[in-house]
Image (spheres, rainbow, N blue to C red):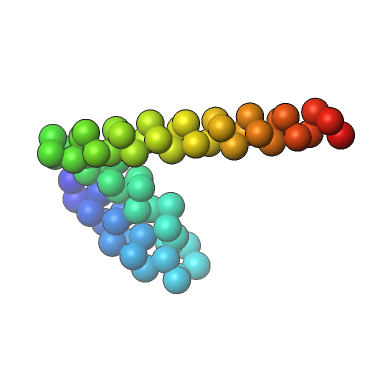
Length: 67
């Protein structure tokens, strides 16, 4: 839990060179492991993002097939 909180705090300081926005979702995922209240929301978000990524990749492959 402390690592998750530190990652989320580091994500808020994303204007610094090493810290970035990538730390927020990673911290949220780690926090969802410890807090059962967050599990349904985080899993739904992961499923939606995975589907969106798959759809974008499918469209990109389809457009490049014609090139």
